[in-house]
Length: 353
Image 1 (cartoon, rainbow, N blue to C red):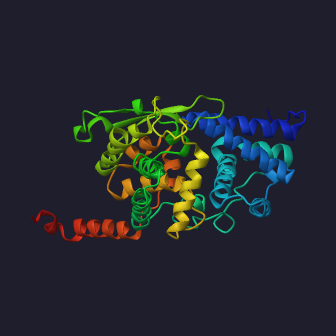
Image 2: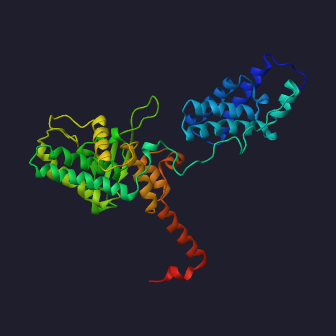
Image 3: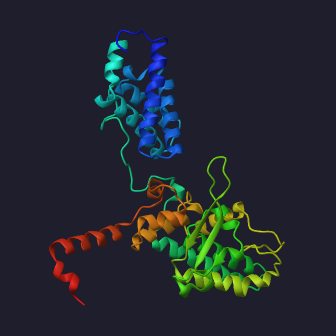
């Protein structure tokens, strides 16, 4: 109330600001985890400035950003941190919440928006994830799979025992790509995880994959999802492995990727073999197996699949996460532009046989 002095006024008002912003975000039905992370970021900024929001300046933003960059934080991470504090400043400077009146009365100063176009991170590139995770072009992907198949032929022609392992690894990499899997998800697969999809009978018993070891939220068990088969060639390659080649291992269990010692292929082995093949064909040495999952998402979008479908295939809770995974190529963009222009200016061409 006006005229009433607050005990520990700065801390009391700051706490009330954070609680009010939390309620505002909850009213927008944002996830609890998103809200928690944003609040934590704001508290970090408070700690960095050692000051209160009504005394923050654009210079604080620039000093904070410089520290994050020097600490090696990713471009996209810095932008997300900036966005969280900018949203908080936007809330405080909105006259509808009357924080300017509270701060003027108690501190003789008011909160303002300290983030602007000259001190915030921009979208630097089409792809902002880790360089080693960027999607492969279709030509790069074809070269990689061609080399996988070539290795099988070479080892088998020499009469070497390891041809089963090279066939297994070729099938494994194709599976990671064609169903958009993480290394651990792929390594944990079993034969029983595959089932038919009545909506796509052409894929036989490999129409859907039950992923049982998806990436877990903090403190939660592995997340499960079902990935629908979208690539017929991959279903054929998997069927050949499961029904013709895998039985030669004399494996007694249900693991999809057994070894000669009756163990299962691990994530480190997947990374080592990927690196070997990557280097052999001259791909960027930063690339790791996870780039196959990013390629899956990008190529589905380029092929016209709905963004929500791709998001569900990947098991993402939020579309913004899927956006980090995708970077459509120039050819796709040009085709999309041409189609849009034809619809707008040459509709008669769309009716031609």
